Length: 220
View 1: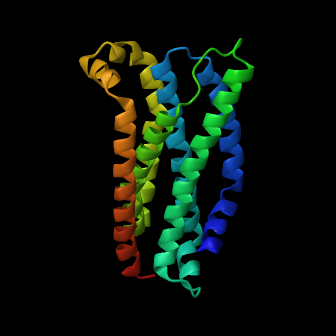
View 2: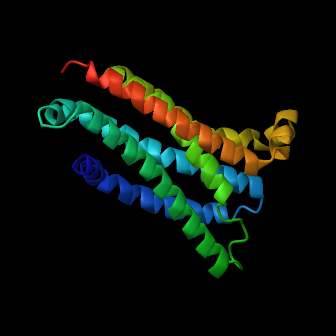
C-alpha cells in the first residue's frame, strides 16, 4: 500500500508545485481581508479545492493511461488499492490545511503591519477537513463505479467551483444580510467543527467499505 501511496504522490508532484504557488499567493490575499468570517470561509474553500483538484488529476491520469488495468495486473489486493487512494486524499487534505495554517500564522506574526487579516484557525481546519471528507465519501464510490461518468461530473463541478468566488464577490453583501447567514454566524463553531469532523470520519470509513465492494466486483 505504501508503494501505491507513493505512486500517487509522485504523479502529483507538478500539481503540488502549482498548488503550492497558488496557495501561497492566495494566503497573502486572504490575510489582507479583515473580516474574520470571510477570511475563514476563503481558507476553507481553498482547503477543499486543492485536494479536489489533486483527486481530479489522478482520476484523469488513470482514465488516460488505463492505470486501473496496470495496477490490477500486479500482485496487490484490490482492497489495498482502494485503501491507498483513501489514505492519499485524507493525508493530502490534512497536509494542505496544516500548511495554510502555518503560513497564515507566520504572516500574521511577522507581517502584521501589512497584513491585518486573521490566520486560519484550528476550527476552520476541522471544518475544512470535515467537508472535504464528506465530499470524497460520496465522490470516490461514484468514481470507482464509473470513471466515464465521473469525468463528466468533474468538468461540471470544476466550472461551478470557479464561479463561486465571482458569485460571492457580486452577491456577498446581500448574502451577509440574510437571516440564514445570521443564524450560521451565531452557531457554536467549536462544537459544530468537532461534530462534523467526527461525522465525516465515520462517513469516510463507511465510504471506504462501499468503494471496496464496488472495486472488488469490477471487471477490467
